Amino acid sequence: MALSISKKTYMQELCKTFRQDVLRVLYDKQTGHPGGSLSVCEILTTLYFHAARIDPGDPQQADRDRIILSKGHAAPMLYRVLAEKGFFPVDEMNTLRDFETRLQGHPSVKHTPGVELSTGPLGLGLSASLGMALGLKLDGSPARVYVVLGDGEINEGTIWEACMCAAKYKADNLIAVLDWNGVQLDGLTDEVMPTGNLPAKFREFGWHCLECDGHDISDLCETLDKAATLSGRPVMILARTVKGKGVSFMEGQSAWHGRPVGKDEYAAARQELEGENV
Image (cartoon, rainbow, N blue to C red; front, side, top):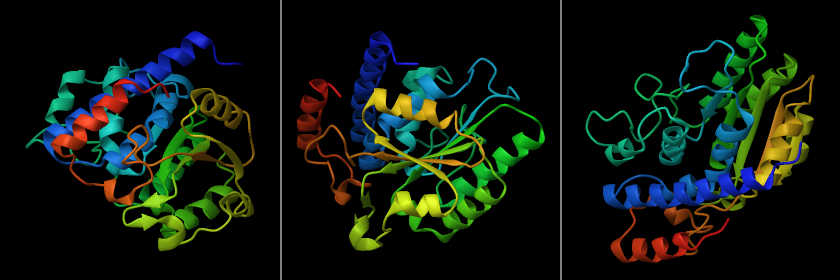
């Protein structure tokens, strides 16, 4: 089903607000990960507001879909989306990384409403998501598991072990989305650790593989809808994105993986984001 103009506009406006709010909090706290948080904005927004069946009023519903942010350093954007979804007040964003806050630097399943898995050490999210997916299949549940991966993360051997295992057990209720921005902590992925032809590689590992524009709401929604119709194998969505999307001097720059935002930088970024129309 085609995405309505009103829903597309609504989700685009959400993304604009999310970017502004996340950057403000990161500036206020002088900590966090701006590049990856801005990169994954549309992906998380479409998962929570379009693709997944999740009810904040009944967060432990057995047949709910699960969303795992395996690239846990992008937690600030996850928290902002969860707050908008209704898991906790938006004002709680102001406690990011404070002592005893529920919103730590990486997601915590013990403390943060809406978080399905504690993540931080890169590479573990796909394996855990596969375990969830297989458990749901054993229970006869219609639920799906969505897992968001990062570029640097797929350097990890455990990612490829999980890929082999997911294909072997035909985990077709598992949908992975790669935030495919071509940049990792200390450089371009092609320079740090080239991953080659990823579409061909994932298909060779036994996955359905789709590609889309990771900042285009319509393209993301259509691709996620298509992924939900595929069967027999897990699905990998390669979502082409830009690290630091929306702030020109951050875009594509590994330096903004975890760098604090200065006063003048924040002023310039705020001016850009207030006029942004994704």
